[in-house]
Image 1 (cartoon, rainbow, N blue to C red):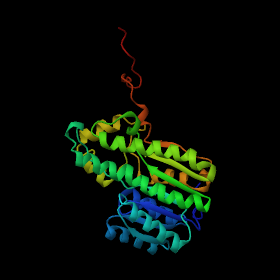
Image 2 (image 1 turned 90 degrees about the horizontal axis):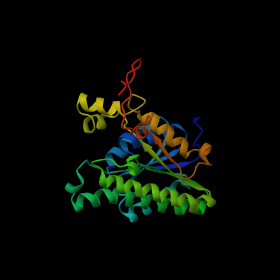
Image 3 (image 1 turned 180 degrees about the vertical axis):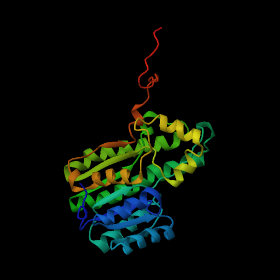
Image 4 (image 1 turned 90 degrees about the vertical axis):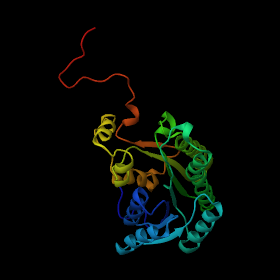
Length: 270
């Protein structure tokens, strides 16, 4: 159970913290006692997140950076450690994606997604991880996706990048676990946000097709996703390492070729 003291005295660094899931990770971590580092490229949005945290009585530090640039990340981590004295949690939430047929993805489009999702996550993980290893503790959580291992049409570039994130995380979990640094991944399913409604299910028919594939019969919420992720970063999860937690209402399991009859009905004999 997460409480107002779960992250008391800890510094939590969150990328992509200006909007959506990252913003809620930041505000919720602050509610749970953390000093929150809100990081991303758009400083105006980061300032809005930080101001919301401060108005609620929390502590926030703004770091405008491009995670694709290792020097930017190194400078931010050095600043955070200098100003707060520690770095306990790194949440790799920043991402980039667009839906396209694989044969229509340009080299520039491919490299853009790979550089943000895989290389950017690697920069943040490795640079933060080096400090965590020195201080003798730490947690890294990277946001991935279930289609990283079962495939997702239209996401060849993103699936490849996110699969790399999972492989890297599990490898580091083995390397760093003996030194008290845990590395895990969270794979959200369809989460109901303003952006996803516009981009992923703009029509009632599209929404129904997605909902029909989710055993829970509904979309996930931002708060459900954030609570699961922050639990994996909390002291209660000290023995969770190298885990990939899918939170999608069971959708990734629903890949059967048969369609169940309605309740009370039976299949016809053939």
